[in-house]
Image 1 (cartoon, rainbow, N blue to C red):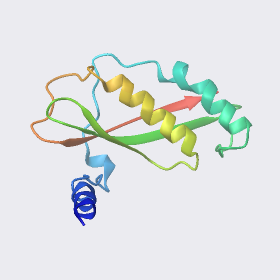
Image 2: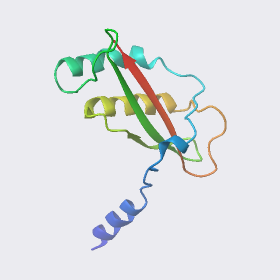
Image 3: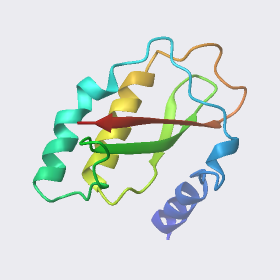
Image 4: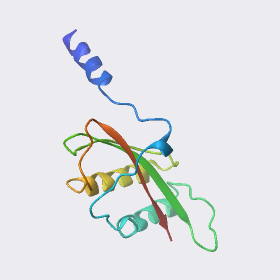
Length: 126
């Protein structure tokens, strides 16, 4: 009974991401990593292996955009990252991990006064 109560309490404390991401402020980092250098080969390989669908090439280039929202605490910690579904869970999770690592100790400006959501994303092309 106590375990069930604790599980329900933990689930209630999870902050749901907002539905309108466009109204969120952008996640600002002091130093932005070179996302394409870190991820393009992985994404290309996932598409080539048939694990992800890619949009049609435009002018001979394939581009995949990964958008996500990030919940930041008043201590500057990343509490949660929710990637937008792009029909490629491995890329979504890899991108979230790259953003989590990039945000660690690298937020520009003061952290928020309370847990706050921010938007970020990346476009990878080859």
